[in-house]
Length: 463
Image (cartoon, rainbow, N blue to C red; front, side, top):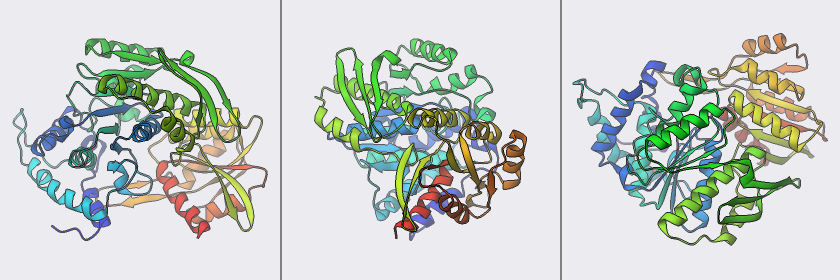
């Protein structure tokens, strides 16, 4: 098979998206199949120095910050994030850059033979593995690419959960595990209790791994992480509020002090907004300190500080000023796509812009609890514009938002009246921006897939 473009390759892989939840997340069998796929490819994941990041909220930002910090120290860094915002190649980016299309196609054509082979392989229980799924393919391909590119470190964001996630294939004890805040999301897969969800998240911890986590909102989650680390004979570091002091915001940058035993950094400046981003940054800084100790390199503090001052992760508390019909508008983009992330967004809006009301443009993936998220939005909303999106459609699956009728029902049940429903995403964006008072901020939030469409609208304005 020949791929003439990256889009052809991406469409090919999408045909491996399962039709049902049971096929998509089939526990240890899916992980066993992923391990078999990687085994056929020469176990590239075991040749890498991996930083593996799990959690319900903040894992994407933590992965991004970790990669940026390591890049600032002169290392070649592979980064896997999910979902991607603009380009499929974000899933296996190298030092913040996308690989050339021709190279990606070349690597995939080499990798494809293992995909074809694994479906006829037989597992330990005598059952044929069958075709791998979309996420199993892209996770394995990312490890394959990072090995081919000879990265110094591979920063891997868990796709979902941890224990049975298709990224959880590294048995090398030099892996560093990072576990961010744990809350309720994907309960139909991970379980309905914090105990069940935390057990899944902490499943990335293997024998001898270094483990870094954060003071958890739910004490039971921290207890489970602690127990798993002890069981796997892993060193555990917990970042607490006392490790982060003198936090302030000057209208453009956050400032804070970070101290971890002998590793002390005073008056750090962070471009990424929100208190939770400071904690994500603290996790990333702890990874840096641990790697510097283990791999014996000296931290370049000047380069580190400069990187934190300019690093911005698209769609995470991203405050922009845009020119629209000769007037300046302020918009804030944040992919708050579950209840915990939405709570963090609303809390940070209240902290940064005390007493303000905001206009919102929203669209949620239809797999989420829209009413609980809307309830939080309505607490600080002046005006709501609600729209729909369809990310893609294949023979197997369609990824889309809640339809407007469902969102209307939720808003009516909450007693919120000041909203506009618009099925056209482009028209909804236009309505929300045009009606925005110049002294207000338009908050655009919901699914990260939705935000990827919004960025296209922003590009139209620039052009």
